[in-house]
Length: 472
Ligand code: HEM
Figure 1: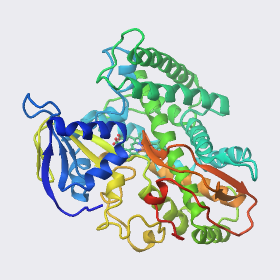
Figure 2 (figure 1 turned 45 degrees about the vertical axis):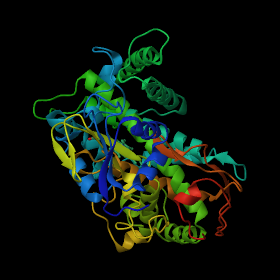
Figure 3 (figure 1 turned 90 degrees about the vertical axis):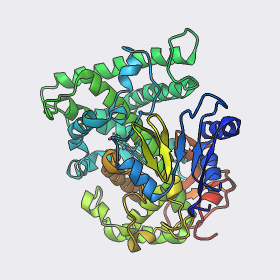
Figure 4 (figure 1 turned 60 degrees about the horizontal axis):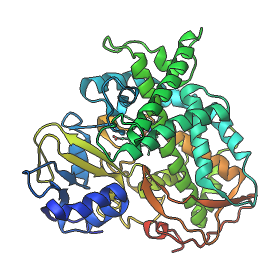
């Protein structure tokens, strides 16, 4: 990938069609291809060959561009993750959670939602998280291949459902997860149109009906929390009983929308990130041996406390390197609210900016030998906030990032204490953007009794181009 300074060029009319199609169908390959074009930033203009300038999409992958877009949320607004619905529909109400909020309202709601995600609060979740991790790991059969991505999804879902809603059994968590996952899947299907229309038999109508079911389930949860004589320790309970911020209190509509977005934001991303971390441990045996030593020497009690977990440099390096090489949120999109300039490109209100963690993390000016898996690089140099952006940056930085860093570290520690991790020989592993940058056809792994010996496995697939493991 050549990330040096290049000329701007606007691809529009019929020439833009394959690019727009590529961006919608396979954004991972499309963004890679863009970075190899002579134009920088890459600009897609009006796809209609007449009718004036039209809306532009500006794809800019430099640190400067990230800063321009992410540090100025009032100029570059977030549009939310799901399509619009009819006014007064359950879907429209559910899509107005924190990710779709902007301006003063976003700042107030973020402030209201922050307390359960502060580092000090997150540290108190350790006993619950560690108990749930063990319950999932108890289900892993030694020496029998299984799909690690299915397991990390289960784990992330269960932990999220417990911490967010206080669900204490698999069935309840699975139910909530299935409701929210189906809502997101239906949204993807309905997205061929910019708005979900209520026309019988269409994906849009199915989405709108399902949103009513999700909203009802969220109201039931919220009502149960309101009736608690003592507020619970789960996030939803904390939010239901939260004090006002600048005279703003969270309504039931806010609470339902935030709850759905929190669960959606929490579990798909974490499942993907955890799966890739397991992959990297399995395929880098020298590193795995060192990490094992670090864990054995420092984590002598279970559960450990959050400070102990935070003091392991190799573990920290693994998680950061995994999020650098394979960031679950591949790119984010923002809409300009007024005239602005992005890397020399003129933008008008309504134009879109595309910022990509994946592309930024592969810029050799920021990370030397960028495809190389090198967890020790994090001990030498700390990148700037707009250079390393798996959790975005600026005022919309992921609210759950302290929580998820702790959760991921605890999962890795426990998995290594209890198992040796290997890929299944000959597996085909492709990474692809399907909402997140995930193992497209799963991650076949096998676990065995830990014996202090580590070895990698031959696998095929685009993962071998994306990550240069230590033995390659
Ligand atoms: C490895 C796991 C995770 C990754 C990679 C990740 C990444 C991100 C990214 C890139 C954004 C910005 C999205 C955008 O601006 O369009 C974001 C926002 C957000 N994330 Fe996460 N996230 C993770 C886990 C979590 C968890 C566990 C939670 C909550 C329990 C969470 C809650 C949120 C919320 C509420 C926002 C919206 C913040 C705002 O708009 O002010 N995330 N996350």
